[in-house]
Length: 455
Image (cartoon, rainbow, N blue to C red; front, side):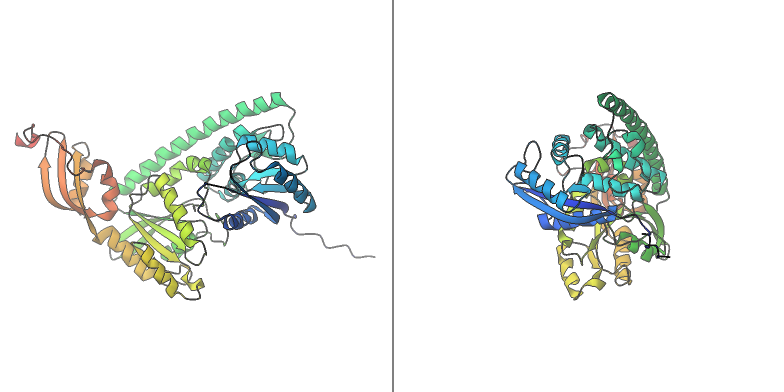
């Protein structure tokens, strides 16, 4: 009896053909080739097998199809030749480009862009109810303006469950027509409203816990960095936690907080956060507001940089841009140049330290540099004092007490509208006083105004 052919243990991965575009005058952190290499890793993480790529440099985008009409025909032929199931653009396509390209490329191949792939990865990696809500909201808001006859019943398809790559939003499904499209749009708008309400409750819940943490006087440290820089490995090294680690982009999505003893009675709460990436989709930034607020409210940021990556400095720039966007640029930062164990010459990492004001070379995998990192964290949170001049309304009694308890008061004046304090405070507390800083030369009140302390 003839032997049966062995059956595959896993389903074959869908074949993806990549398209990269460089438009003259647009500011990109990575080169076209490097960006496509990153896009290839994203596709791999999403479960797609890259079978080819096409690039084009343009003075200006084609208003209909982004790339030129000749390139569209070339792309269609190459996709057929490589038996591609999916065409992936390394850009976020506007709805018009999406529709026109779908029409030009035909029904035999699906079309995704960078944002759709990232959303799919997030859907696979979101395990908490909060993370799944955030991903669903981002998906709905992204796909709503892109609904066509091929993109219907999104409400059944989108969501945080680890679906097959390329299936997010019902890509490839054919709907019954415009009537069904309008039904879908109404259902999606209703679902977007519901998800926003749910996430507002989460925001309020997080704010409640942030207030509790501040009252407990435990400083908070957020680990930030480009995706796959080693943040989760570092948290595991510092705390003995068991956060999931993998050599792939966005391996961990949901934030994890652990307590770390710095020395003696000095402790801090360390939080591992979602990794950043160049061209981070705006829908994700908006949907993950509650999570990103954890970063903006931290006392200290540890910016983890994979110094072994050839684009390490570009990645660091992308992270800094995102920190600026979410309102975290004012928070003290320590840069941890990670993965020095992968360098042929670790001294090159130490040379790179000069590019950052507060930096340390480490290996989260081997533990090298951990003592120096912890010492720098301790010094920043507890030992270093920075000068500050603030005018605090009397309603801000907690901040007034905080200044007296942890700072050094050099000058104090009680005025009608509040207390003016000048002195020095730990750098970790600076963010809490930023809204009340006195600008040099700015008047506060006239000296002869009513002083409540004089009575």
